[in-house]
Length: 603
Image 1 (tube, one colour):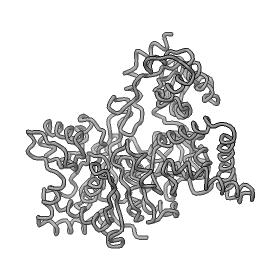
Image 2: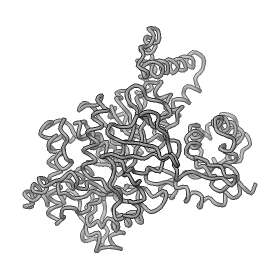
Image 3: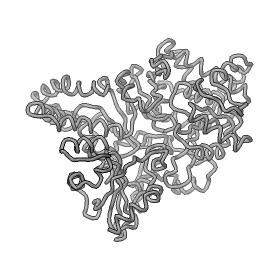
Image 4: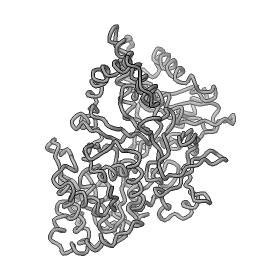
């Protein structure tokens, strides 16, 4: 297998695959899926690269992309690599303040914006710092420019300028002078525990990602169709997309996150990276269907899941041939019940579905494996260019975060059980932050992940986020993520934030699933005018109390939620409660809801 530098990857694949489809995207205005061949992909990357050179970018310049996932995003990234420039992805949901911080910290002069929201924010930033951010290129031709904007251009006009320039030779020289230790991208962390830090990732990290994933993923090939669902600003999706292109897969780009369920059913991908939230929604829907079934159908669903568990987890996963009767039953269920279930979601062609970014509940994971949905749980960080460990095809352990990747060295700090990582996929440090870089590494060169865990042979377990640990007023340490993951399984709970730091006991703020709550009220004859009328209803609270208590059965008494409050508004990125990667900003939540929290403890 050839391992191509990102500056030449698309072009080498274009020579190999020619007219085969490299990218699929749904035109937001025509509402149709369209194909881009490898050859066309390569041509668009080169046109973009020539246009960049025409604007005067130099090797090493930082070029920001502030956009939803779309084909132009990839054209721009790979054009940056061709010019030996550094890609700086910015989440499409970022606020003007977040964009301004990154622009100033990375000294970005050229920014590519996706749609109206991103353009508006980028223009505000440019007005404040015109000497830094000199030009904005906009992907969406429907965006309306500010009347005072004299420098921004549309992407189509931008690449046309490249076609008519004399920069082809310059770009070719830059490509030939590429080095493996050139910086490919600077990805900014979400800043849940402080100021965002720019993680510097060289091309050598991606080349190593290709090598070690080839060792562990022999089941993937150029026949796979990978749904590009998570933001390309997220290292998980970015590294995977680069790997998928290395394998020659077709990438189906989902531009609007709200359209993902429709996109999956239309494309029927064989692979899709996701965070646990997606699978929690799938589980809740299926589990509710089973719970609401009666008589023979309820028995059928229950027996199918039981059979799937025996076949996949008790036998196949342990390398044991299942008994004849179990094999026959599994074959029947896999081609009927499980197939129908997967067709509803659009994942009937599933090969593997990598899942990371947060803990996936063991119960949900076990269920998904039982109904033959090939979810692969993994673990990684921006600083490790994503994957540190993930489930092998067989022999994975539910409750673990998989086997450590080949050529990745992991050990556990004996002082605080912190997971330490060393290898060729690990960053060299943070941009413009030498002190933060020094703190992030041990004296012998291991990266400090900030996660506590344990290692059993080559199988890695994560126990808690060290920085997230709460210490109660009684001196007990609480791992909020573990509680949130378990209690969040309930179909009536959409989001949950555990409160405990410095408090006498554990409490929680809960965003209920408003639809599930009103359905329950309607079914049980509970009167209400507005959904928040139900938040103080005795019957509703008694029902939730019982369900929450049952889910906490395996927690120690001091870890259990003693009180909670239901919230009328969900946690959002715009509201400030969530980061761009949908992690809870605990300090912000504690401050915003201080009155509600304090009242719980006064009572």
